[in-house]
Image (tube, rainbow over all chains, first blue to last red; front, side, top):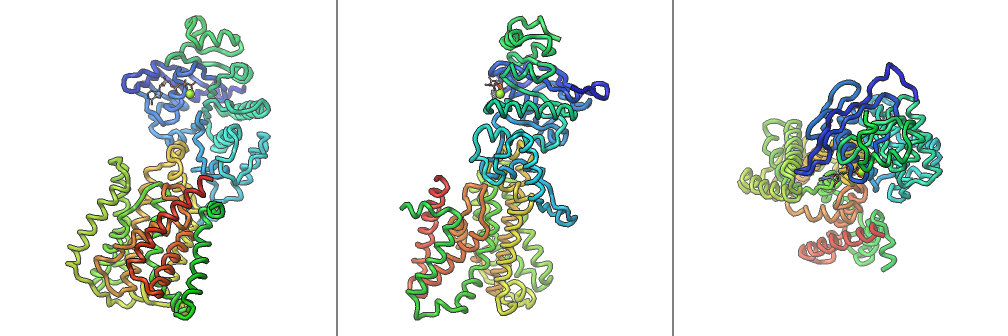
Length: 260
Length: 312
Ligand SMILES: Nc1ncnc2c1ncn2[C@@H]1O[C@H](COP(=O)(O)OP(=O)(O)OP(=O)(O)O)[C@@H](O)[C@H]1O
Ligand SMILES: [Mg+2]
């Protein structure tokens, strides 16, 4: 990991709460991620990870609390707003449009437009440029076998996950949040994704990684933020704890021993 | 049955078109059916319907429906006819088109704001406008004498082909480009196919839906101008009975009535197919009752086949 510009804070979540009717799903989430860091967000099933992701992504409005991006507080009230703030999300359900082709999905809403000034104004697409760009990125992930012009519905679960991931990379986001990005991948592709995440982080991209694979987390992440029943119960440097300790934290045992 | 299910949704209309023409050519071999004049006539007659149907593709692409297009046709024709004597072609057509666009946008806005299906909203708009055009016209038809208007939208011709045919080809090509080469097309289709995912990718799906409905209304208004130009007058009944033709044509053309998939040339051919069928049935001595029954059957059969083809 490269820490630049005096540990610039990329994203800071302060006392975040989210209630659904009377169910309190997030009940005080606090953590900070620096630029270029890879931070794991851990927690048991139902701990509130995806809900937190949706708040950061602008799909849900927090009931209380604050999200700061690059040092200033923002109300992220739409995915569009999140995008403008440089946040991209790989959703747990992938949010791909199954009927559309792989390239169409990769570039949805951020299509490369024609070079000509007039055509660009019209929103004319440069299909060739998009294909080339997509091919290059897929090759880098060792997934050049994914065909670009077929509907996403024809791909395997793992391939769809790769497509969702590549889409985030293409967006050029500063902060990428990944909700279980490797759940459906085989070993080989998993390693490729890990390599990609490393590469992105050296380029200054901030990554929040949600994963149930603790081996992967300890290999890849700098820090782990642990959620338990909607609260941050720990914020630890991964190097300083072992997997068993992480597991204990996730299930709510000894919540105080490691907390920041 | 297997040969039918192998026909893909998009190719269906091409087979049906060729088959129909061949059958009528045999059955009607000693009538005027297979003559250039008859074919140009069909092209002229169906032109406004094609434009309506192409417009409806915008609403369908985002998963909405627009039942008000027939009534917008009448309104647009009447408004243009009433404005023409005092204000000329330019103002009359711009006002009519804007009115159509505004009604469409209003439909879209209302449907989203009140969270009720566009089917219901546009059904209301249709009934309201049908009443309004009756009031506006006093049940009279309004003649159009403005020469430039008639040449531009109705009876003019170029290289021996009716100008209406150029409208059809030109509009179809433009809309085809929108859906295949422009960012707008991607956003429309994404919204119709999976609005949640489109939203997650930052597409403002509400805005896109309103744009789509607005375009649907605007094309209906254009169809109204073409109708009025062809008939050299405007009447409150213009376009009233074409809604079923339009929906049947889109369905048989391979577009999805559920959203996320359009077929522009399929739509054009779908309208022409129904036009040829109508024409052939008339020449064979069938009544307009038979034509109506046929349209109903086509709608159900076409939708049935396209659904099967899509599932497999
Ligand atoms: N829209 C909603 N309305 C009511 N309750 C909800 C809603 N969304 C999530 N919840 C509840 O919030 C809790 C946390 O859900 P969330 O999806 O955030 O968990 P998670 O940590 O992502 O779990 P997993 O590891 O299974 O993905 C769950 O108990 C869930 O039932
Ligand atoms: Mg989750």
